[in-house]
Amino acid sequence: MPSPPGDAIVATESWFVRRGLPHFIFRYSASRDVWTRAAPLLTLVALVEVMANAPSADFELWVSVLASIGAIAAVIAVWVVSNRLRHRPLFSRPEDVGPVEVALFVILPALVPIVTDGQWRSGLVTAGANLLLLLLIYFATSYGIVPMTRWVMGHGARQILSVSALLVRALPLLLLVVIIVFYTAEPYQFAHELPWPLLALALGLFVLVGVAFSIVRIPRQVGELSDHESWSQLRARARTTPAAGIRATKPARVPELSRKEWINVGLVVLASEGILVALVGIAMFGFLVVLGMLTVPVDLASAWAGAPIDELVSFRLFGADLAVSSELLKTSAFLAGFTSLQFTVSLLSDGTYQEEFLHDLREELRDALAARAVYLSAMIRPARAKS
Image (cartoon, rainbow, N blue to C red; front, side):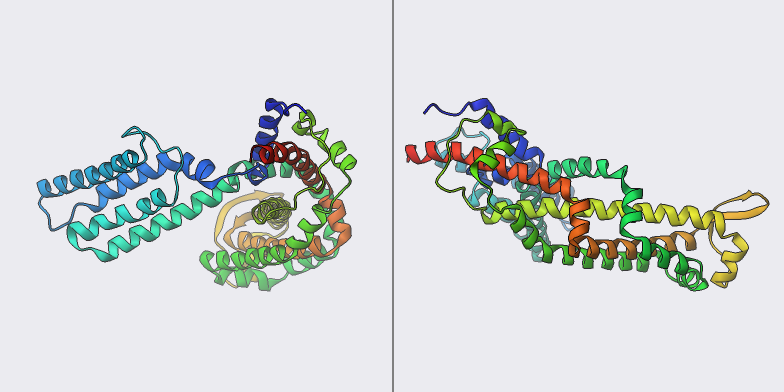
């Protein structure tokens, strides 16, 4: 059987990446596909850290300059020696960044303040910061966070047109409760006394609880997505993707999702649901702000708060003094956060909600899983033949 067209393979892999599913790529390698692409950034960060950590307040200016030059020269020397040992051009960029290069990125900049001035604390902070940077780069690049976010945002943008209908369908009773609470004095008193940082922490708690609940439900959702369809059904789904151009025969068994592939799909599901919940929260916040601005005059808001309110924008309309105040924004934000949390629970626990609001997402992910099945059936056979 002839090899599958290379263009279709490349197009399918690019299609996976654009949807935030890079781990669907056959033999996706962290050293080749993550660290090597990040090598220029890591090199620049290491050089900046070396230059910043080499000088000391106890050094004279010329000594600090020499220390920085010497530290940079040491880093370049390590680079040259590493290339020499691997029989590569002395100043060439590494083709594969492995554990040795990653360890050097963490250790070398951290050693500079220790060696030059005995600053152990500075060295440990540098090493810790580099480890954190490596984790962020690996997570963001390995799981395609940027393209995933772009695709999820595009998918979420299509939901904006239906947000009003979504609110009417999903939140009628809660909306009634929110409106009743909104027109009482307690929220304004609460908002008047509550500083913005504490409100931010409260909203962060809502987000944390919602994310935790979503994570608990993700295994079931991914399991439902990855239920095996017949080969003919998979091929039919794949015809709407770039994998339609791949010539593949029916495999004995479609490979199960690996751990990283499973996490990749779970992240896409989590991000997509997060966008939907965020749209609900933003819509509720905007609705409450406009409603409060038009129906709660300044005098009434001050009476409810028990003190003059903090007016941010004020105006007169039909003889009434109206304003957008800090109290109104805080009250609206808190109620919108509570509404978003309630919607999250409903979305993930009610099958009717999932079918109505997540149907398109599920179908697109099933298409991606079908494309993966066709793609892998074409990639695995040649790889086994070569081995």
